[in-house]
Image (cartoon, rainbow, N blue to C red; front, side, top):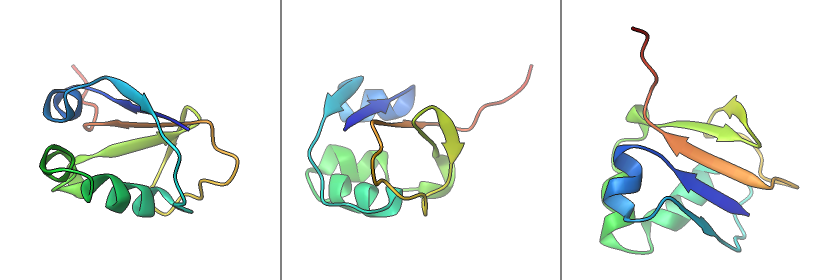
Amino acid sequence: MNVLYFAWLRERIGQPSEEIDTEATTVRELVDELSAREDRYAAAFSDPAAIRVAVDQKLSDFDAPLSGVQEVAFFPPMTGG
């Protein structure tokens, strides 16, 4: 699965994307798995309320299933202007 990081998440993690193998069945489990990897991931995901997620380019929530998913993207909330 391709995992994409945008804005300050990319800065904290130190890379824009990565290809991962995971046993996670939901986005929440994926976040837990990533957070347990290293401090930089834990820092990036420390406040889930400040993170939005897209699963296969569709805005989703942390309970979204990952079965068959090709891409998960994490980014801060969008604002208008």
